[in-house]
Amino acid sequence: MSSSAPPGDDLTPPSRRRLVIRVLRIVLAAAGLAFLVIALVDTWSRSSELLRSPVRLVFAFVIVVASLMLWSRAWSALLEHEADARALRHGFYLSQLGKYVPGGIWQAAGQVSLARDAGADLTRASTAFVVLAVAQVAGAATVGGLTALFAPDLPTPYRVAVIAGLLLSLLVYRGWMVATLRLAGRVVKRLDVTGVPSQRAILHSYAFAAVATAVASASFALITRPHDAGLAFAALSAFATAWWIGFVAIPFPSGIGIREAVLLAALRTPLTSGVVLGAAIGQRLVSIVAEATLIGTTGTHRLRLRRRQARG
Image (cartoon, rainbow, N blue to C red; front, side):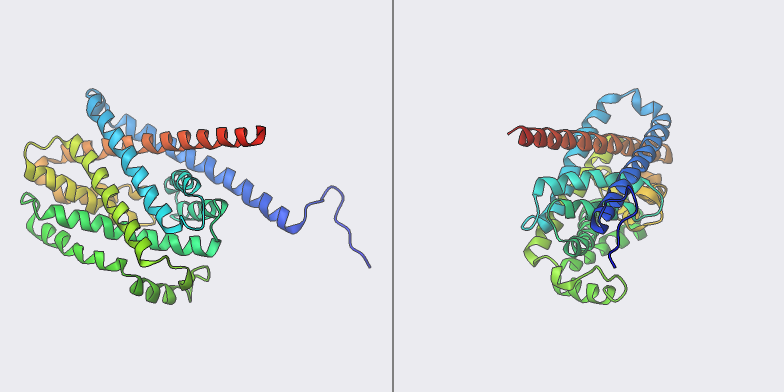
């Protein structure tokens, strides 16, 4: 007996699945954009004092754009041999919308899914995302620890703890990553230890992540306007540390609240709470605008490229 599809339903199961995924992406992208706009409006309303001195924000914006480009390189370094590097970087920017959506999984889901569209195997992309997260945390902890060595203005217990965070750089050893992922793979089936990138690729990703964090930290330090080198290093160290702690605080969208708390713990005494919170708001403002700018520019470039290919 032959079976026939219901009238009007001529989609095969794979086609139907692709359609569902496409619709979900559109919905999640719209939700991410909406939450990003909400965050932008909220941040803008609280940054009136900073907006009276826009020059610092303009320079900070340029610096943050550079840091995001470096972070995207940290991602593409892990998959560049099996996927289109430009598409991977665009997917990285676009997935940033997901971090503003409550839930803590949307950025990861978007980044992995878009990596598959760029040509990467889904399982390898899932594994690479975990490796990237480790490289980002290790890179930020490295920046925080190294700059803390030159920051006597930081509270002593905090400074000692941040310097001890240099030990997190050991996480980028591939052998330990494989062992950890083998344990995690018992719970998350998409993780495959055979898909862990080479040690060289991991170190490249770690280096890009560390430089990206240092550059992003510089944008925060610029906005605080430290009056000496010690305070500048304190601001660099505090931001790098606050960044990775906020990054691992998954339930909090974009680390909101967590990063500010860490920054206050480190810098309230030497810079005052008003200066710290003002700089945190300003840095978040330029980060949101920088993300939207990169999403728009890379998306426009890809659209133009597709049109040229269609004509040619």
